[in-house]
Image 1 (tube, helix red, strand yellow):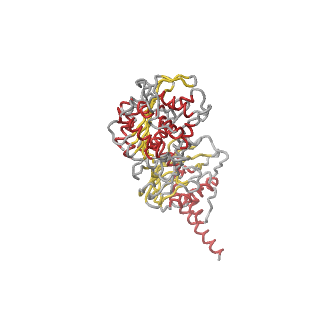
Image 2 (cartoon, rainbow, N blue to C red):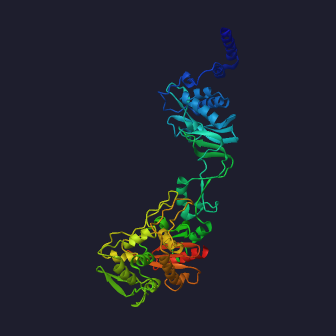
Image 3 (cartoon, rainbow, N blue to C red):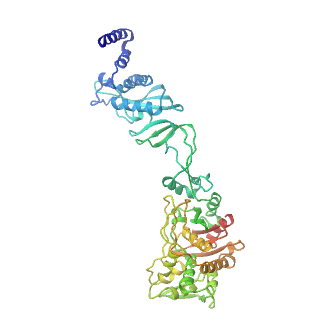
Length: 550
């Protein structure tokens, strides 16, 4: 019985050869179930002796048409046999068909395009592809390179770019529901809608969070995508039905962020680099981060001497560790010598030998804080008390705000020597901080407790070793309120309800930096302006904009 069938096929083949001529070979090979085989090799193509002379345009187009006719007729072995790597091509063509759930593919505009720039010694042939795949119809331009061996036989040079231009060897195509990864998650504000990538200052932060955060929600779309060897989406090539991207929700307040972006560009800042951070003082949520300048995000990484804003922590240390009160004596002298270094006050600070701590804080008298700090907080050369207060009460340390976003840690060295033992109490010497940290300092005072800043809700927050005492928090709020309403911050913040503040001007090389940190009933804010001549006349404008918005 088997023998009879074979005879029947042979007879049919003979007739077909008479009627069909040269094109009948492919039908015969298909009927006899040939493998991907070696059709190009059967025709004499030798991949080990490739000619440096490209085939003519007509030769290349003729072979390409044959290859495409086989492909469109779903004779994948036939198409693969027209290439110089038939086994690899056969597997890739089947993967193309299965991955796209292909029902029909057609080709048009088959044209010679001259020598191939990608494949030496080959002629490029371009064409268009129209494929009916799962979910819809997809069209795209493509091309092959046709080369000859030295005996004159031609073959389509195989690589995955034949399936789709630029497709890598470890990549494939899929159609239908788009795989995860083909649409990036959106990093959004606390409203769940506003894309943080739309804010100049948050573009890099959003990119970092997108890579490290956990996205939720969203609805996958349908279309055609490139996937890697593990099936993960690489990029979307065609969308049939648009989905919605999953989101990573942050603590950022879109309205306050808009105000912050504008505030750091306030005309009074005169184009100097500026950075600001706003926090919800009740829970540590970062509500806004904005900056200008070419040196990166100085709002969370601008590590600078904080100047007199450090007097908040110095005052806390004097209250907690020396038992002082706002009414304790703090004479404000024109200058003061400490550890052989001469310190002066900022211009405009009037001497007051009968000043107390509250008055010295309001006018930001350096000599008052150096005298009391050096006298009460440095013992036998040990000047670590300010560092300890910053760590124990204000949570100074290495913070993770979430999403892999890097921040620079503040520093108050425990081993301050010489003049630095005095300079630290006015935020100079080796003391450094960021607007993020100084905003947290103000938030700790207003909240009567430290809440570590975070940018992702639910992010783990470090705690301070001990809470700020109600007594110390009350003293600081009273002093900061006076500074805002009748002291150095009053020109910018006077008249605003429920505000407490501290200004700062820090010397750095041949210029000064302006600082201001403050709070109101809702938020705590800090700002730094590099090159600002004073805190109130530079950073003060930035802080005011946020306080009046938030």
